[in-house]
Image (cartoon, rainbow, N blue to C red; front, side, top):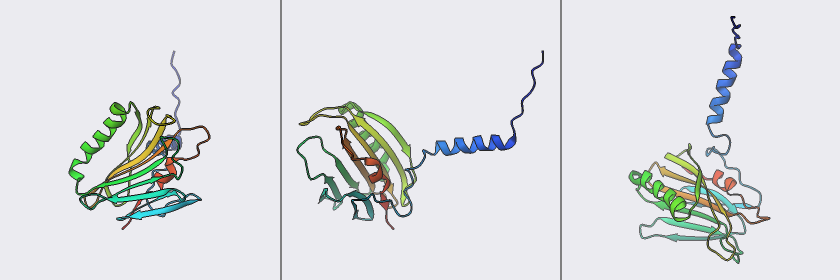
Length: 192
């Protein structure tokens, strides 16, 4: 018995191919070009050609390391329960040749030291960078006055000048908590 051959129309094949290509791009949220969307109630922090949004009532602590590179921690005003939310930016000047090693080390800390999980780790396009990775992680409840799971979203990138930038936003997962790291990461820009 011969089975009939079913031919799919060529336009359907093109649509399926296009849908597959778009799906593999990771979807929205990974466009780091143009003007960033700053959520209501947020301010923009800017240093050394880097900018990003943060909650307007959070406290900024900027330090300079021995090489003159800024290290920034932005934290909520209420720190009674730990862990608490954290936005962290660090720069390693001229460390581009060690980028892969530095990224591997940070992933090892999540998985081996904190018993966490790297949920996603993908290449993204960040204008002004040679290479950029966006990762999301989750660490189980551990230390603190109110141990809870912590979800993080972040960028690791090499700038055109070979500086390595680590940008991370961590959110404890407490009931009623509304702090979402994604819009902060998505507001990250390298300025010309």
